Image (cartoon, rainbow over all chains, first blue to last red; front, side, top):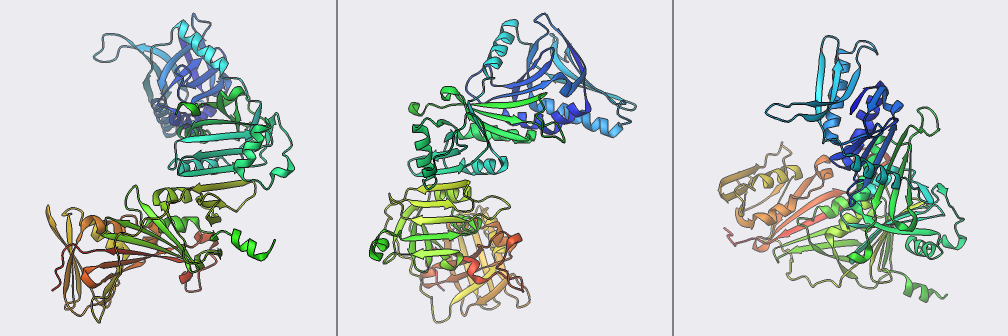
Length: 319
Length: 300
């Protein structure tokens, strides 16, 4: 089992400034799944109850000189502490900028190693960051879990494949900050959030307890996938009646999720996505958030980067 | 539809406010613990919110009708309803967005006697809330404030200094003695508990720590620390920033009245209500009053 690659300048900045800060908010530990073509960061794919978050990069988006080999079709996966990974990348960056001497002078190499730590009898696996400065080299070892077994990798791959289905209707949230700001404040009022999404382009979020109902409705959002014309007599109704009617017509779906999960998924804005879409998976199995990234300077989707979250749906009957 | 039918259907109050944050600030100022039941009283002059604690402490927030951009009052008498203060404030806070002034409409009652709040800025994004109200409890203790004599015993200090003094007195804790004496003009806060601590506010004409002072004889009263703390525990940051003063008056039986002023202006960038001298018009101020009952009568 071998892995060795050089992080590109762009790759370092993607990880350091955008993706790792976002992933750090999703949970302390994630799986890093490396294949011949992709590096994938996965949260909560093997244990079912949290927000699933999947950040997938084509190797060219982050690395050059990417070498991987394993007896399991060149696939390697392990668990890693995101905050430690972020710290290692950050300090490597500061070393590079401190002693920087031209674009090729500093190359940040990462590789998988086994080392015998002090006071240990057994060698432990590490992801090692090696930065060569002008006159010095800095090596940082980030501890990782034992690489996943063949069966576990298969399980991870299956979970990943299952998590790829797209909701039939997606609506685009134009102002993620506004939504995040609202949800952060809403958290004080209740724990359960009803989310309904219609084919007309309405996103309606609501907390309802015995003492208070607090909600927000965003209308006329851009719809991707199945869409429908909003009935004209809906215009003067309240947000709640409008949602009820759309659901009864089969033009909308509603799920209940944890406010905490919803708010956590919004932390992905740290990755600075260009567009954000919400959708409800078929049969209301989960609430999906898809973040889209453009090739810098264009409005074309950067297909080498993808990020999406899946929020578990809570059964309203179980409370 | 006849005009009388319209009147019968109109809610007691429909009002609009363009500074949610100011209202959140004002209501937060009387939020001293997690669960507080408030009574809201509506009238043609404005909205008053009253909270009370164990018969010893009462606070009122006056939101005069001039604070609202629209104020339609249709009720006879003064309708009152009970509401959870924490929930009300947390809910209003959801309507406030940093860096933007948002206009909300408040209506009472809704079809099920709820308090209805909704944003009215934009048609394509709307925030709404329905808060369950209660039949209000009767106020258990009468806080009629009467002056202690022919001349009022009163002083005004910078709100920031008052808060600092009360925060410092947390260490001795339990019971705090307030002494006002005319000569030399001075107010003393004295705490005796786990050690002694004394904070003196001396009145000099030239300094602006104590802004006003009226006292013709020495008086001394004790107050429970936890009630004094409630007076400044949630003072909005705008009060400190605006360098405002708080007025304290001691009435008959040692009842302490404390008045704060909280700005309910829109965000400064788009502020149309500042006059040439840079002062906000008085109509953009919410008045907060606290009444604290003294612990033991010690009138000298």
